[in-house]
Length: 323
Image (spheres, rainbow, N blue to C red):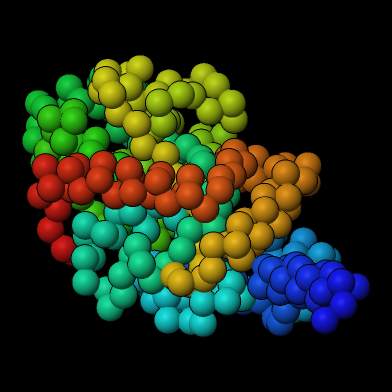
């Protein structure tokens, strides 16, 4: 073999390797499906549709959103977990993914191995609200009232494993009060009963309760995160109002099928983070009372692991029973 032929062979080998590496992270190469763990209208659904709209503009392939609610989010998660590990089936989900590891430990798939984190999408606040007729205008008055009359004050929340559910259990535990806990299939139904006075309290995401607070149909007692929300700066945190250390946020993320190659995960994550950085996307999230917060796949994996450990301790301590 001549020296020229040897150099040509080396060049072609390097080129082929580069093309192979590039093709292994090419995405998307076919239609993309974003599976949503909840019904249409909530933030995980809104987020999926925003991403789908922008992703469609970035590619020649179609991007569809499919809602698969139920099972505390596990119906959608199982579908994605059992899809091909090629990054073309994505999951729009929330903090239930960490909570379910304790509440629903045997879903038919492995929460860690069968589902791969892509990126965090956003974090938001919730509000502890009361029916206007309740004789408590702040958390301190509520706690005092509940301690004087145990199990006479009711509080509604959404499905098991949702942020409103775990926040309800944590509040009762940390405040040392006994409440009548009323589960609902959705926070919308709970809010309707709180407005009418059938239920006294509820914990809901900002988009679900803020219009009713502004209209005087609900009283805002406190927000659930460790810091106030700029959307309602005059409403204190639960911690400020007397239950020190209370901190519960909502968070949503994008995930895909476990076993998806790491370079492809990084590629998808980078593309989604580019979308999330767009001004109109940030504005749309702010209108939902949520701040855009993104991450690498590794950062999201570490966050979910920490959240799962945190809530395992909380849920064990408050002895939540299946409903």
